[in-house]
Amino acid sequence: MTTPLLEVRDLTRHFAVRKGLFGRTTGHVRAVDGVSFTIHRGETLGLVGESGCGKSTTGKTLLKLLEPDGGSILFDGSDITGFDRKRMAPVRRDLQVIFQDPYSSINPRATAGGYVGEPLRIHGLARGREALARVAELFQHVGLRPEHMRRYPHEFSGGQRQRLAVARALSLNPRLIVADEAVSALDVSIQASVINLLKDLQQEFGLAYLFIAHDIGVVEHISHRVAVMYLGKLVELADRKTLFTSPQHPYTQALLSAVPIPNPRLRRGQRLLLKGDVPSPINPPSGCRFHTRCPFAEDRCRVEEPKLRELSPGQLAACHLR
Ligand SMILES: Nc1ncnc2c1ncn2[C@@H]1O[C@H](COP(=O)(O)OP(=O)(O)O)[C@@H](O)[C@H]1O
Ligand code: SF4
Ligand SMILES: [Mg+2]
Image (cartoon, rainbow, N blue to C red; front, side, top):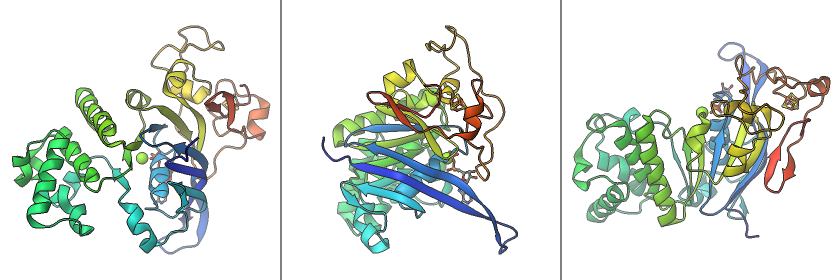
């Protein structure tokens, strides 16, 4: 086996909860609580789970936009967990991120060309004519016309603005892009076109993605493997086909409940609907964190935490009943 491009082991990130603005710490949000996975070169790992489960914190922590509290991050074989800003600088180019509609949240008078080319300027990689040529090339890579470089955010559609965000992320020739709800705000048909663009760029440049979405349906067509997250922990991890046809964790089954579940424990076509909201990650439920919403919960589930175990080659799940 070759070394994975990215490996996170037991990644942890908590946030202090304070009383008042400068008050004492009254608790901790256990946003990411011991998460491990790998991403290989050219691979897409989908990361799904309801809002508040810790997906964005996972993405930001592995990019070191947030400092981890525990665990380790290995990028291309080197342990970057303790890297300071200076040592991160060269690694930054390899790791990029795309959020939901970032271009419209910046200065409304920033031209599209300026936005896409900004990382080149920040890293001192290209100036003047050379930068212009590179930006024009990036516009073409994402299916936009270079003449639109002088336009402003409001002159583009939502899908086009996400293409610009993709172009900007590509500008430094990264190896891994974290796409955090990058298509979530778009209409279904536009989502599909941006996902196809990401897949084409992956083929062309050998990119790896961590593709984050709260909607499990959105990750299906781009992911090679999918990780399912619930209250700071991974509950299931499997290759795409296995996860969608034979989900083992009740939470995964619930997320997939819009489609009939081919699972022997459930009657064919029976739906497992998720009731209630995600409990607070400040005091997560004891034992299995899903027990308050799980229709199969037993006494053991309330006291003993299930470990993420390999059930069949490549399929891991954390449930006492599996
Ligand atoms: N900067 C922060 N300070 C305090 N709590 C935070 C912060 N960022 C996220 N959280 C909390 O951590 C939990 C996980 O959030 P997040 O990673 O954004 O989840 P997701 O992306 O899955 O919706 C939530 O309870 C959220 O309120
Ligand atoms: S361990 Fe128990 S509560 Fe948790 S998912 Fe499995 S059956 Fe449900
Ligand atoms: Mg998020």
